[in-house]
Length: 196
Image (cartoon, rainbow, N blue to C red):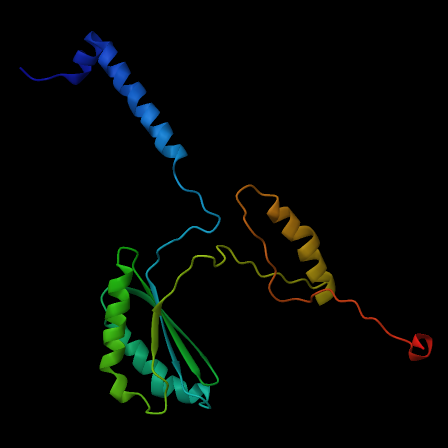
């Protein structure tokens, strides 16, 4: 004789209703106790390798450091994407891992890969800095704004006055911040003769 749950629930509805009410009540209680933060901590497996060599040109850094670091970390398991940026005296390589990769393992594997090639890198570099990228507090969405009809001052004012206020009014938006553009300033011209 097979157990038919549907037939049993129809013949005896009270236990099914009690179970439904208990599960619903537990769901509501636990949903209300979920923590809500303005800047949630999202654990994303991204590792950054920063290497500095004061005075070195970006082209020099690319051949002597960045390419070697990229090749070394490309062999680490779980790597999804590698990007590098160079500036005067600084090479930064960002390694994005697949989401199922543990962050600590990603950092350790990256550190091991860079340590293996340390002797191939120039002696003048500062010790490589390998760290996880903590995206808590970083912007979730970034927009770039341009206008062929407005100058920098007008566009900055438009973003601050219209766009930022509109976005700030949306439920769930914690903060809107403009980067770049022109900040409002007031110039005061003093007349030395009238100050006396």
